[in-house]
Length: 253
Image 1 (spheres, rainbow, N blue to C red):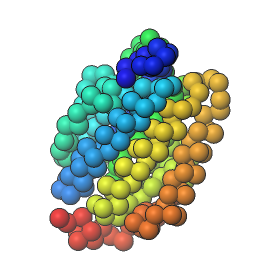
Image 2 (image 1 turned 90 degrees about the vertical axis):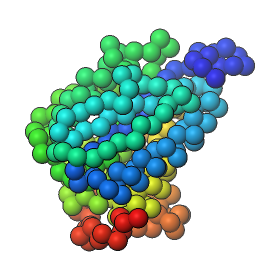
Image 3 (image 1 turned 30 degrees about the vertical axis):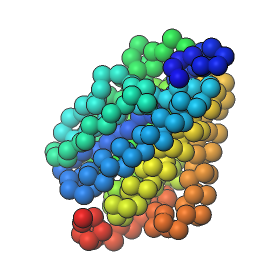
Image 4 (image 1 turned 135 degrees about the vertical axis):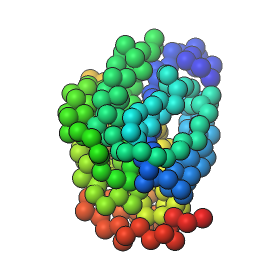
Protein backbone atom coordinates (compact mmCIF):
# COMPACT_ATOMS: atom_id res chain seq x y z
CA UNK A 1 0.00 0.00 0.00
CA UNK A 2 1.45 3.35 -1.00
CA UNK A 3 0.19 6.89 -0.60
CA UNK A 4 -3.16 5.76 -2.00
CA UNK A 5 -5.32 3.27 -0.18
CA UNK A 6 -5.54 0.15 -2.37
CA UNK A 7 -9.28 -0.33 -2.10
CA UNK A 8 -10.65 3.17 -2.21
CA UNK A 9 -7.87 5.21 -3.75
CA UNK A 10 -8.04 7.61 -0.80
CA UNK A 11 -4.88 9.69 -0.35
CA UNK A 12 -3.02 8.93 2.84
CA UNK A 13 -1.07 11.44 4.87
CA UNK A 14 2.37 10.58 6.17
CA UNK A 15 3.45 10.12 9.78
CA UNK A 16 7.21 10.10 10.29
CA UNK A 17 8.76 8.18 13.16
CA UNK A 18 12.11 9.66 14.19
CA UNK A 19 14.77 7.71 16.05
CA UNK A 20 17.29 10.13 17.59
CA UNK A 21 20.15 7.95 18.85
CA UNK A 22 23.10 8.75 21.09
CA UNK A 23 26.14 6.98 19.63
CA UNK A 24 28.74 8.47 21.99
CA UNK A 25 31.53 6.34 23.44
CA UNK A 26 29.59 5.37 26.55
CA UNK A 27 27.04 3.62 24.31
CA UNK A 28 29.63 1.14 23.03
CA UNK A 29 29.38 -2.62 23.47
CA UNK A 30 26.11 -4.25 24.42
CA UNK A 31 24.20 -0.98 24.66
CA UNK A 32 24.51 -0.06 20.99
CA UNK A 33 24.37 -3.72 19.94
CA UNK A 34 21.08 -4.25 21.81
CA UNK A 35 19.67 -1.05 20.37
CA UNK A 36 20.51 -2.17 16.84
CA UNK A 37 18.86 -5.55 17.39
CA UNK A 38 15.72 -4.01 18.91
CA UNK A 39 15.15 -1.54 16.09
CA UNK A 40 15.71 -4.18 13.41
CA UNK A 41 13.19 -6.45 15.14
CA UNK A 42 10.51 -3.76 15.46
CA UNK A 43 10.65 -2.64 11.82
CA UNK A 44 8.33 -5.39 10.51
CA UNK A 45 5.76 -4.42 13.16
CA UNK A 46 5.85 -0.78 12.12
CA UNK A 47 5.65 -1.83 8.48
CA UNK A 48 2.49 -3.83 9.21
CA UNK A 49 0.97 -0.82 10.96
CA UNK A 50 1.66 1.32 7.92
CA UNK A 51 0.44 -1.17 5.31
CA UNK A 52 -2.82 -1.78 7.19
CA UNK A 53 -3.53 1.87 8.02
CA UNK A 54 -6.02 3.43 5.61
CA UNK A 55 -5.37 6.93 6.95
CA UNK A 56 -1.61 7.21 7.24
CA UNK A 57 1.57 5.90 5.73
CA UNK A 58 4.42 5.58 8.22
CA UNK A 59 7.92 6.66 7.25
CA UNK A 60 11.06 6.37 9.33
CA UNK A 61 14.05 8.67 9.81
CA UNK A 62 17.08 8.03 12.02
CA UNK A 63 19.53 10.61 13.36
CA UNK A 64 22.66 9.60 15.26
CA UNK A 65 24.72 11.99 17.35
CA UNK A 66 28.09 11.76 19.06
CA UNK A 67 30.84 14.27 18.27
CA UNK A 68 28.61 15.38 15.40
CA UNK A 69 25.36 14.31 13.75
CA UNK A 70 24.49 12.12 10.80
CA UNK A 71 21.23 10.96 9.22
CA UNK A 72 21.02 7.30 8.26
CA UNK A 73 19.30 8.35 5.02
CA UNK A 74 18.87 11.77 3.43
CA UNK A 75 15.08 11.56 3.65
CA UNK A 76 12.41 9.60 5.54
CA UNK A 77 11.89 6.12 4.09
CA UNK A 78 8.63 4.14 3.90
CA UNK A 79 8.49 1.73 6.85
CA UNK A 80 8.14 -1.29 4.58
CA UNK A 81 11.31 -0.29 2.68
CA UNK A 82 13.42 0.98 5.57
CA UNK A 83 16.66 -0.93 6.17
CA UNK A 84 18.35 -0.27 9.50
CA UNK A 85 22.10 0.23 9.24
CA UNK A 86 23.77 -0.91 12.45
CA UNK A 87 25.20 2.02 14.38
CA UNK A 88 28.62 2.12 16.04
CA UNK A 89 29.46 4.11 19.16
CA UNK A 90 32.33 6.51 19.83
CA UNK A 91 32.93 10.17 20.61
CA UNK A 92 31.19 12.84 22.65
CA UNK A 93 27.49 13.54 23.30
CA UNK A 94 26.52 16.52 21.13
CA UNK A 95 22.84 16.48 22.01
CA UNK A 96 22.50 20.22 21.44
CA UNK A 97 23.77 19.82 17.88
CA UNK A 98 21.29 16.99 17.40
CA UNK A 99 18.48 19.32 18.45
CA UNK A 100 19.58 21.91 15.90
CA UNK A 101 19.82 19.30 13.15
CA UNK A 102 16.40 17.87 13.99
CA UNK A 103 14.89 21.37 13.94
CA UNK A 104 16.31 21.98 10.47
CA UNK A 105 14.60 18.88 9.08
CA UNK A 106 11.24 19.38 10.83
CA UNK A 107 10.08 21.64 8.02
CA UNK A 108 7.86 21.41 4.95
CA UNK A 109 10.98 22.42 3.04
CA UNK A 110 12.78 19.31 4.30
CA UNK A 111 11.54 16.05 5.88
CA UNK A 112 7.92 17.17 6.28
CA UNK A 113 7.44 17.98 2.59
CA UNK A 114 4.67 15.51 1.73
CA UNK A 115 2.29 16.06 -1.16
CA UNK A 116 -0.64 14.60 0.78
CA UNK A 117 0.29 16.41 4.00
CA UNK A 118 1.78 15.13 7.23
CA UNK A 119 0.57 14.10 10.63
CA UNK A 120 2.56 15.35 13.60
CA UNK A 121 5.60 13.08 13.96
CA UNK A 122 6.63 10.73 16.73
CA UNK A 123 10.16 11.25 18.08
CA UNK A 124 12.04 8.71 20.20
CA UNK A 125 15.26 9.91 21.83
CA UNK A 126 17.66 7.25 23.12
CA UNK A 127 20.61 8.31 25.26
CA UNK A 128 22.70 7.18 28.22
CA UNK A 129 24.36 10.40 29.28
CA UNK A 130 24.45 14.15 29.57
CA UNK A 131 25.20 16.47 26.68
CA UNK A 132 28.77 17.63 26.23
CA UNK A 133 27.82 20.67 24.12
CA UNK A 134 25.38 23.58 24.50
CA UNK A 135 22.24 21.50 24.85
CA UNK A 136 20.13 24.37 26.16
CA UNK A 137 20.74 26.51 23.07
CA UNK A 138 19.93 23.65 20.73
CA UNK A 139 16.81 22.67 22.63
CA UNK A 140 15.58 26.28 22.72
CA UNK A 141 15.78 26.40 18.92
CA UNK A 142 14.03 23.04 18.59
CA UNK A 143 11.24 24.02 20.97
CA UNK A 144 10.39 26.93 18.68
CA UNK A 145 9.65 24.49 15.86
CA UNK A 146 5.90 23.92 15.37
CA UNK A 147 6.33 20.33 14.23
CA UNK A 148 8.32 19.57 17.38
CA UNK A 149 5.68 21.26 19.52
CA UNK A 150 3.04 18.99 17.99
CA UNK A 151 5.13 15.81 18.04
CA UNK A 152 4.76 12.85 20.34
CA UNK A 153 8.06 12.76 22.22
CA UNK A 154 9.41 9.88 24.30
CA UNK A 155 12.93 9.47 25.70
CA UNK A 156 14.57 6.20 26.67
CA UNK A 157 17.32 6.68 29.25
CA UNK A 158 19.82 3.86 28.94
CA UNK A 159 20.98 3.56 32.54
CA UNK A 160 21.53 7.32 32.49
CA UNK A 161 22.54 8.90 35.78
CA UNK A 162 20.72 12.14 34.96
CA UNK A 163 17.34 12.05 33.22
CA UNK A 164 16.67 15.80 33.45
CA UNK A 165 17.99 16.64 29.98
CA UNK A 166 15.76 13.95 28.51
CA UNK A 167 12.78 15.33 30.43
CA UNK A 168 13.58 18.79 29.06
CA UNK A 169 13.52 17.29 25.55
CA UNK A 170 10.15 15.60 25.96
CA UNK A 171 8.61 18.36 28.06
CA UNK A 172 7.08 15.65 30.24
CA UNK A 173 9.04 13.73 32.87
CA UNK A 174 6.56 10.85 32.63
CA UNK A 175 7.66 10.40 29.02
CA UNK A 176 11.19 9.49 30.19
CA UNK A 177 11.74 5.75 30.59
CA UNK A 178 14.89 4.40 32.25
CA UNK A 179 16.15 0.90 31.45
CA UNK A 180 18.91 -0.94 33.32
CA UNK A 181 19.85 -3.88 31.12
CA UNK A 182 19.86 -4.99 27.51
CA UNK A 183 16.64 -7.04 27.70
CA UNK A 184 14.69 -4.07 29.09
CA UNK A 185 16.19 -1.89 26.36
CA UNK A 186 15.14 -4.26 23.58
CA UNK A 187 11.61 -4.66 24.93
CA UNK A 188 10.97 -0.98 25.62
CA UNK A 189 12.21 0.06 22.17
CA UNK A 190 9.76 -2.35 20.57
CA UNK A 191 6.90 -1.35 22.85
CA UNK A 192 7.41 2.42 22.60
CA UNK A 193 8.02 2.38 18.84
CA UNK A 194 4.80 0.51 18.13
CA UNK A 195 2.71 2.46 20.65
CA UNK A 196 3.90 5.86 19.46
CA UNK A 197 3.40 4.89 15.82
CA UNK A 198 -0.12 3.63 16.48
CA UNK A 199 -1.20 6.80 18.24
CA UNK A 200 0.60 9.26 15.97
CA UNK A 201 -0.66 7.71 12.74
CA UNK A 202 -4.29 8.02 13.80
CA UNK A 203 -4.04 11.54 15.18
CA UNK A 204 -5.25 14.62 13.38
CA UNK A 205 -2.86 16.97 11.64
CA UNK A 206 -1.10 19.93 13.20
CA UNK A 207 -3.43 22.65 14.40
CA UNK A 208 -6.59 20.56 14.62
CA UNK A 209 -6.13 19.21 18.14
CA UNK A 210 -3.98 20.04 21.16
CA UNK A 211 -0.90 17.84 20.63
CA UNK A 212 -0.50 17.22 24.35
CA UNK A 213 -3.60 15.01 24.24
CA UNK A 214 -1.83 12.52 21.97
CA UNK A 215 1.34 12.53 24.02
CA UNK A 216 -0.72 11.94 27.14
CA UNK A 217 -2.38 9.02 25.36
CA UNK A 218 1.01 7.49 24.57
CA UNK A 219 2.25 8.01 28.14
CA UNK A 220 -0.91 6.41 29.52
CA UNK A 221 -0.55 3.40 27.21
CA UNK A 222 3.10 3.05 28.19
CA UNK A 223 2.29 3.18 31.90
CA UNK A 224 -0.43 0.58 31.43
CA UNK A 225 2.02 -1.61 29.55
CA UNK A 226 4.62 -1.32 32.30
CA UNK A 227 2.04 -2.25 34.92
CA UNK A 228 0.68 -5.24 32.99
CA UNK A 229 3.87 -6.74 31.55
CA UNK A 230 6.06 -8.43 34.21
CA UNK A 231 9.03 -8.44 31.81
CA UNK A 232 9.03 -4.63 31.93
CA UNK A 233 8.83 -4.43 35.71
CA UNK A 234 12.32 -2.94 35.99
CA UNK A 235 11.65 -0.04 33.59
CA UNK A 236 11.15 3.20 35.51
CA UNK A 237 9.47 6.46 34.53
CA UNK A 238 10.29 10.00 35.53
CA UNK A 239 13.53 11.68 36.64
CA UNK A 240 15.97 11.18 39.53
CA UNK A 241 15.84 7.44 38.92
CA UNK A 242 18.70 5.55 40.54
CA UNK A 243 20.82 3.56 38.10
CA UNK A 244 22.57 1.32 40.56
CA UNK A 245 25.95 2.01 39.06
CA UNK A 246 25.48 0.18 35.76
CA UNK A 247 26.43 -3.32 36.83
CA UNK A 248 28.54 -4.79 34.03
CA UNK A 249 26.65 -8.07 34.18
CA UNK A 250 23.42 -6.27 33.27
CA UNK A 251 24.87 -5.31 29.86
CA UNK A 252 27.22 -8.22 29.25
CA UNK A 253 26.42 -10.78 26.59
